[in-house]
Amino acid sequence: MKGILGRYRNQLPLANYDFTLGEGDTPLISAPALSRATGAEIFLKLEGCNPTGSFKDRGMVVAVAKAMEEKSGAIICASTGNTAASAAAYAARAGLTCAVVIPQGNIALGKLAQAMIFGARVLPIEGNFDCALKLVRELAEQGNLTLVNSVNPHRIEGQKTAAFEIVDELGDAPEILALPVGNAGNITAYWRGFSEYLRAGTASRAPKMFGFQAAGAAPIVRGAPIENPQTIATAIRIGNPASWKGALAARAESGGLIEAVTDDEILAAYRLLAEREGVFCEPASAAGVAGILKLARAERLPRGARIVCVLTGSGLKDPETAMRGLELPEALPATMDAVARALEIG
Ligand code: F0G
Image: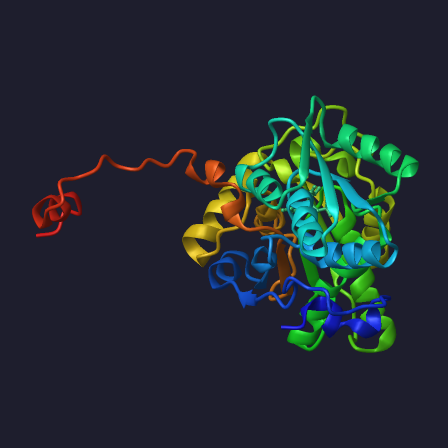
């Protein structure tokens, strides 16, 4: 396993390509139930299969490799959880100090556990992600600290490799790429990747970029920042995305769209992915699929279109949301009889 630095070294500007936790090269699988439900040809890009369970690892490996090259003393980020987990892991690997500033009470448990076990300094604040990002941007300007949020250009460079992988595997770009939008770094990165492959002639077309925000945290859809964003999909609970302009450019240049999906639509897609496709992603990751289902219901999807939905993070990050509304039965006596009766067999 070479990791994305080894595999895409010609497209990534670095001095040392040996640094890796095994990120990238994630599965792209067909989604038969979703394809039947929408009349499209749907594939799922399983970014939860990255080393820390989200797409952030693609950008973090580049950002941390650069921080090492530049002899940075420490890295810092604001995060809704996944960036923190990823930064903490790569910092541990690199022997760098890592600090993460997070919105108190709005981080999925698995992400918090990751940041802490990797030994990061975890600082919850009485404020949301947007406040945390503003804080760390100011702090990074003052000290010998490298900011590893996606405003760090190396993050976007690393994340664009997911677009390369999709084209490399399908033989060309899909017609549509659907993904959740939070701070808008990822939609910016995918668009850069597809655009570079189109310019290089590796792909004959670029996909329309379809971004989806949670309805309670949809500043780009609304056209104005949101003071107090709310959604069950805590990963994308963001009211003032840093890469807003990148998202608008991706939408305009690709002829795509950015729309909102409700929490109920997100949860329905999240459960459908688990129950019908056997894929457990985190709630935010289901926003892209929720959006595609919504467009199909409104007959706004071209029939038979090849669509890749990016599932950005693993469902194991957030067991609490998964268990909500589910009930584990009382323990039974350890007998055939009791278990057979409970299963209504015979
Ligand atoms: N999906 C997941 C699972 C995420 O963690 C994020 C962002 C997104 C989608 C949205 O991506 O911000 O590039 O538009 N998480 C960041 C974090 C904000 O701190 O982990 P984006």
